[in-house]
Image 1 (cartoon, rainbow, N blue to C red):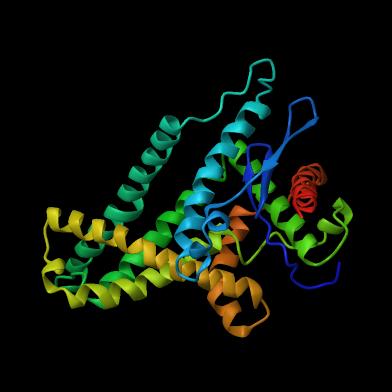
Image 2: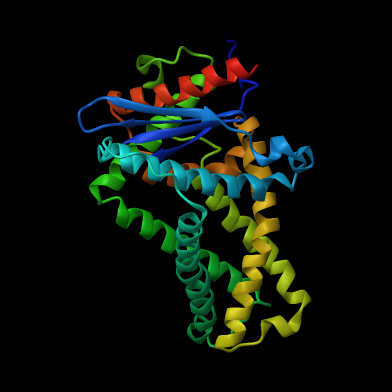
Length: 313
């Protein structure tokens, strides 16, 4: 394989004691069991984008990719939890749509409260500190809102990093990145080669979150002043404004995805480095240095995905 970006796009996600890898036509989950063995689940995968070519177009594909990543991520975490706890004697219970909806719904509600409503409400209260009311019509309102959201996200990541199991997930996150970096560099998929690569990757979901914050600052600053009635104060108005922000997350996600995609293809460009630097810096909290056994698991999942892609091709 020649050096440079390969034609096959592979992404991944850390799970409990393992890694999930996904390509356009395959998905594989490798998990280290308590007895030291590695259990592998690999299967064909066809995304909505592959089924409906219209969704491949720029600014349409971002929300679809994000939604699919959420769904496959929850399923991968469920499988890894079963495997890591060594519940081999029980037949695997697939995650039903009811459970999936409840899980994602609960996560969405918590995100809405702690990363949506609370920063928005606190941004309005910040006006008392500067001696004048702040509304979403003010640029400074959205700057403060973004700073509070960023602080909440970083504090949340820092806090959960002290939980042993979460810290190991972060190490597997680093193993996922190192493995993909080795693949994209055209190197043999072996621990000795993957070990030498960085734990940071421009296409990581952590970078995506930071780019979303920056893009949302721009979009909100432009949008709300265009509709003065949307900038009124009060609890119900705050809830309504946050609901509008949630609706605007679809175009924001679309723009952010295209930035991340462009940045991944032009990683050596000064502009790409500037845009992606905050996310890459934050990955030092979420993608930790793995040991060789964790790299081995990530490479098993990656090899399984590539093998299925060869069969499909």
